[in-house]
Image (cartoon, rainbow, N blue to C red; front, side):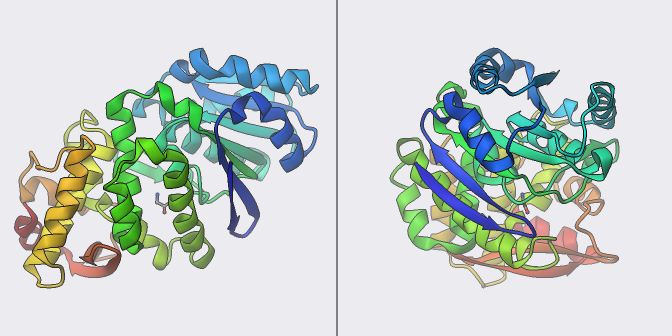
Length: 349
Ligand code: GLY
């Protein structure tokens, strides 16, 4: 078992280990004490893991409610947010009660947003069941729902009280869903850990507990420096500005991880074209992404991509910041005028 402390505005532990779900109640009790609990999950995860979670919690005397959404990105919407808030209010949840996000990024983001605004904020716990949620979305307090105009356009920063990652839940992930998380794993190594990149070349599934702990340590360091995403944290957007455009253009048929993988290759090629990254690193990045089952070729043109990317929430006036690798293990933010973006993206295709 591994434990990583996140020192954000409120500090909390990320606990990673095998078979933790059956002892959920112990960890909940230690983190938040006795409270009424609302588990938020999706229909897929509900069928697999709710029973174990509820059994542990009820055996310890917790009162437990459950709110189940349909799986998939389309559920991360304002209608589900309002239904969840009404659900909590109808059941008289109070400020001392606690929500539990049991699932992947969609469940975590929706539950965290509801916890952040219900009664102006109640506590919540993240129990990620996908690799992507374990290494990225469950840690750091970003919560959101999507709006018609784009992904994650409404949300609040709200830190969880605990993140409990049972790596056994990753065993049931389809290969493509596991690969999605690998895109975020590889991201951390490109941002600031060349040695980790080397270890990842030796396999991710085989070493998943260590891999998750490495990623969470990197994320915890970044969140401690810049919880509210005003500077350093933007490094975590490596591949994401272009990636979000790819996801949107595909109507979300291309998954987040696949889109981030393609976006990462594009920004790396841009960095090579600018002379700030060498070709060997670009080849190594592309081949590691490819080896875990992620796509690396972009099906869209530069004009299509910039039409969406310029509406990204990261845009600041007439410029947009792309994260570019100087090489594996080191990245830099690069402010680019919106008028020049198409030229840059063309170099990455
Ligand atoms: N997923 C990027 C971040 O948490 O900042």
